[in-house]
View 1 (tube, protein in one colour):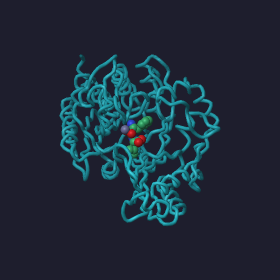
View 2: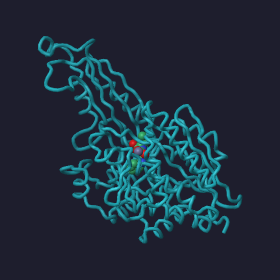
View 3: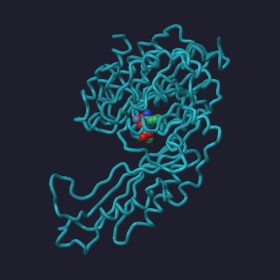
View 4: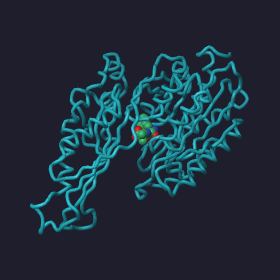
Length: 445
Ligand code: BES
Ligand code: ZN
């Protein structure tokens, strides 16, 4: 087994789940592991404490006249549950059929570590200044990273921001992502009674919060996929004919896409293709729902309360705060009489489009093509990396979204994996990028 792979396995063994308090020591351990590894690669590195989880900051300055790359990634991972669905335990990395299985293999430890391995292998030959910002709170909203970026504008200054936390369009197809959706995450809680009651003794004569919640959900999105919140689509930028044309040329098979997730058919707004729905149309999805008896067998009861958690993926020009306001106003309008409604707002993120003609983007396209021996394609993505917007806003540097993962890597799900070839080519592409950048941005040799 090669050195980078052995090290990645070591990194993946640390269960750095950011959402759970019990994993706080593991979060620290993962941050310390990175600091130690980056120091060994000749970087000055530290784990900067925050109100939440530490941010790993590291830099290696090879020359003032050289271009500077800021590499961003995250060392935190999603919870591994449901554990019984993993073929091998999530924090015991295992290789099967050329793939490495572990929580965080693709999102994002495998991808961010490809860059650490790259700078390490380049050693004294590193032709650019490199700074790393690797956070421990990406999966829980990056709330402490925004103030860190704002407070360290000078220290983080760069000619390019390099982010690897997204998938390639298809296996073997080098991909640069130029668009990400934004996000508004909320929860509605309904109370119809002061306590749970017998459904025979009271049924038909008292409010049932589960029904009210179901009815409200039905009013939020129609069966065709149209979001019914007034004003929701007001700021949506239409898809340009040029983008439509470009996306239609990508190798995509709708039946295969449905089969890959075990769906009988795809879903969504009529008039738009699957890629358009995922990349350039906003959507509403219930992410969790609860009320009443969830145990074995039956229980005749009317629950006092119900809740549903939901999120809206947003596209350029929509604003997460404005969407949250519109949604809350609509929920308050439609809530049936006799229920107390509480609306909660969780984290959000702005949608982004990064320029495709920036010189770092061109260097990245060449770097990827060289690694994979194929021409790089340009795509958008449906997921969100909220800090990208803040990097653009605060640092004003072009962002390059150079993902090494695959859509089928089981992100946030059981049996997450990274293909070993992707990890290997990721390291190669990263080295190519650092080598090519100076001639593209015209600094250094
Ligand atoms: N790596 C993903 C982002 C991603 C997923 C980009 C799929 C492109 C395609 C990232 O770690 C993530 O999951 N982000 C969260 C952000 C949220 C918690 C604010 C997301 O998209 O749900
Ligand atoms: Zn993620």
